[in-house]
Image (tube, rainbow, N blue to C red; front, side):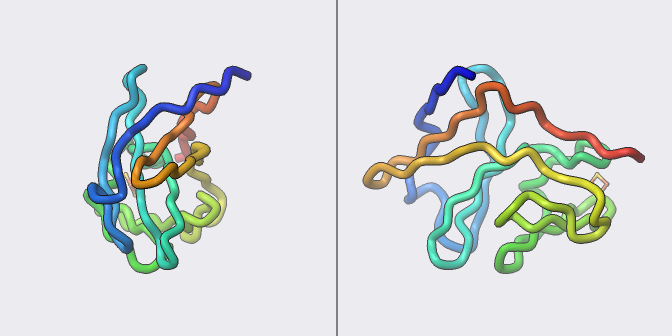
Length: 114
Ligand code: FES
């Protein structure tokens, strides 16, 4: 697998407890969130249910609720909370100073069964 970290934003762009939408050089839509404690997470930008933009949802601590039909995801792991049988693609991240890097190579966004 090709490792291709690219700079996506800085920590000034997304503060702790917040999230935002970004697009990588190859057009991959991602959601970048900074969880409590400063944990940086990058996941697929659209909901696996019906492709709604996840950044328009609500983030409470590490649980993201999609605004469209209220599916919930744990951004620590990408695992679905409700329903539990779905999953977000999680992209590796790296923080260097204030710069945030993401590697989307070889990781495909998930879609749910329904
Ligand atoms: S599109 Fe996200 S819950 Fe339906």
